[in-house]
Length: 125
Image (cartoon, rainbow, N blue to C red; front, top):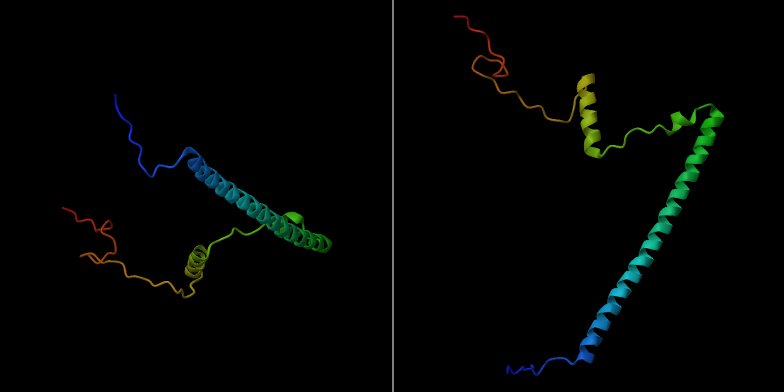
């Protein structure tokens, strides 16, 4: 028969259950704190949305009084991140001939002096 050796520092079942209970208590506390934080966030979000909605309603009413259609007022330009906007400005500058802040790099020249190796003069045989 095999003899089971119990280590001298093994916890009793009641001690082990106290650790499990403490761990569970901490987990429930975390969940409750996150629930409260989520509720506060949602309340602040609703308040911000209500403020903006009220401001937009006022603007729409003023536009209507001036004879501007709601559809025209609500039509928003697409949101662009700063890099996209700067690319757009650079592109518009190129179309209008205005100087741009983007550096221009010279195109590589081939032996024939053309800027692309794909465009080569035909040599007839």
